[in-house]
Length: 60
Image (cartoon, rainbow, N blue to C red; front, side, top):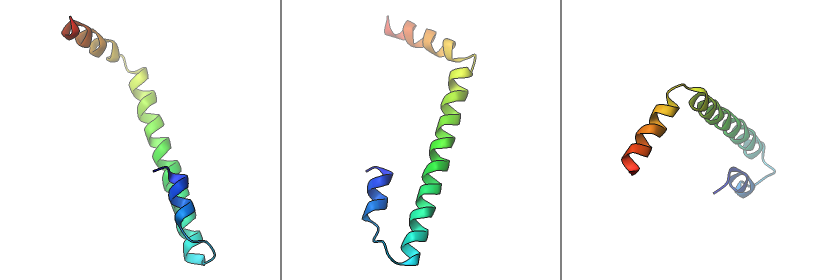
């Protein structure tokens, strides 16, 4: 389930629902930002070539 689908299922109109929608959007944004940082760090790491070499040797 996508975050946008989850947000659409929350009934609108009440202030609590609107605050919940905003909180979900902020949490989703922070979560995606954290994941992108992890991916960037893993791609920039020097050890990723070692992992690929090990995986290639195991595949043979």
